[in-house]
Image 1 (cartoon, rainbow, N blue to C red):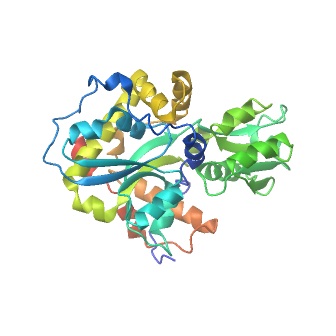
Image 2 (cartoon, rainbow, N blue to C red; image 1 turned 180 degrees about the vertical axis):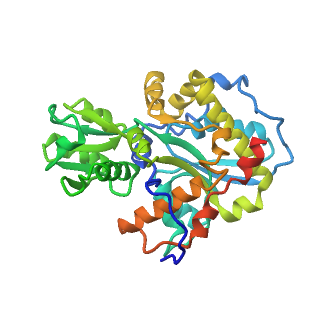
Length: 360
């Protein structure tokens, strides 16, 4: 247990990233389809002068979550910007897999949920994991779906059963919303995986669920309607994120590579925000879905720019570090970690050195 008395920002917590989306979509990804066919002629170039002096090897874990990481992968921007580096992309199915790979030194950088990242940095694991980029802020991509058409507000679920995968971003958003309306003791919250949620819904064993795609759409197509989303929880001071993290040893040993990696990630995010048609095509290729499905998936997220990420709310101040510390408090309260680490552990996790340099 931490003995520090540094105050936490109430309500600002991260939880697990939407790993259910990664798991659900992973079966759709064809391993042979890894390149945007429209980019064979090189329409999307490195956003800065390529640096052939970077010759390091980097093993990058990716997940089937629609954000700039997949755009970068699809357009081969890292390979274009660091032509002499050895870049390997490795498919990860869950945050647990990522942390295990970090621990066995078989992965250097990866998209990972805040919950497994914070778990890894907290007792008993105490691993040196650094957050280096925010892939997205989750909005309508995770929502509370209700079966009873008469239920239009959270208060209407008093006495009802709500399903959610425990320890996930959806779980955290649900608890935030219930707590805001003093309804925590008025509903029954049960822990179900996304596939089990759909089955329980069809058997009328649950009344509502806070969940993500593709289960979200499946519930909506089976008499459901949404009454809240993670965007609403963010408005209550509880934003949820998909993060990219790396091992401390790799990050500190490869500053030049990290600067270029960050510049390229910023370009992937720029394409999402400024050239959504190009980005949606890349996402569709990587997830093996239609362009229309890709565009729908992107609507559920917000993608912070390099300038925003370098600001006070994230890496440029204490914002992200406080969010990570609050995540640990949430996980401890849920029995997901043994104890809180010292405050400096979570401060060190927010590693914005390369972001600060890239933003100059």
